Length: 491
Image (cartoon, rainbow, N blue to C red; front, side, top):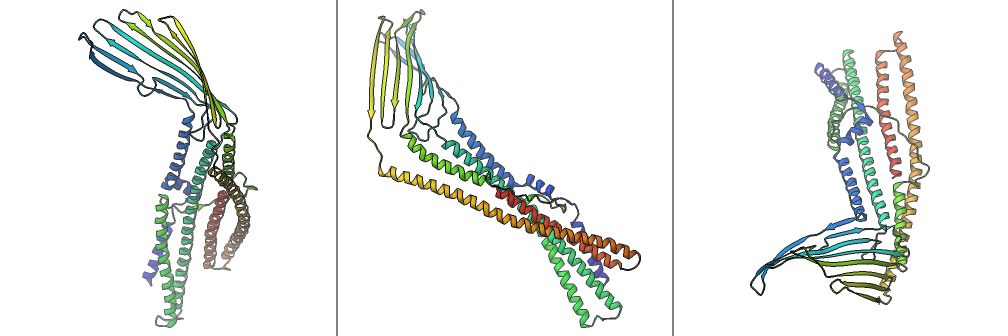
């Protein structure tokens, strides 16, 4: 009997030690978020999306490219004099090319943007001969710009980027909520296990007291059936407690595997904020569905706009070569100046250009003018008609998806209203029960002083209050899960 008492006290001591090192649930969750690899992965995925969107914006910035190519040739002229030629130019690219994009971003390769292009090209040839050394320099400067005519409204890229960003934020927020839910559920399971351990520790203590008292009063003997029944009940309680301790250890290990933190008992849980918003018009899901409708509609509108779109390309170029010999004498050869314009519409284009060639050697100039155009027949086919119908169906699907999202949010709101009412009712009842038990405990303590109740009755009442406090903690966690459900509804 003495060994059993020592074992029971040891189990109670171990259990009490395991419940030490307490903190608030909010701190535990925040610390878990800081150490969780899952949250880190969520943040990395969201940051990656932001970088991709930022990279796409680079297409709207001025681009400058510089190219350079140098090579040499060696040969002998008719008099067997060896000479060398050295040449420097822009290679396969321009010496300098500047592209300044406009505000319009085309949706396909066939379309153009209101872009300004400035190019500088040319080269330098150094001819090293025995009798003369000469530099031949050629430069070409060209400037062109596309003037867009008609409705070039294009929101597709902007809408797609907004949808991508909102989806990234939604995925992150939903992952964060799911993580918090799992932490809450782990803590609730641990608290429920602790409560059950305390319950069976008390049962073991009470059952052992019953056996000891019955033996001491000679109400039973160790050979009696009643004693064996009492002992069997005690053994059942002890086995259940041992199982609960194994489960407790498993819960602690699972918590650490999931959060990366050692579990600390929770001694403070805040009351949840269960205010449900009146409308979900601003939720991420609704906003994404609305943007999808706009995107599908804009795609249809874009097809119609392209039928009336046209543009005028205006440009000019100056081509100027000259040479300098070893005596620093400059020899201007000629210069060409050209201005051109090209008007392009849906199925035809007209181009015109004027050019002036100036010959500095003969001191003459030659003007010129050219005009041309192209036309293609209407290429609308049955496939285009089918594509238009597909686009219209996609718009209808997007509108139905928006309606479905709004309906789902409405039904979720009704369900959450019911959950909040039920939770508030349970919570108020539990608080009333705790207040009643606390008042009763204060009264019982006064009665103990005058000998009207026993200490064991006081201990039982204290135990009941402590168990109710466990129920309160778990009920508060249930409320925090409803709070997270409300947060999900806003996504």
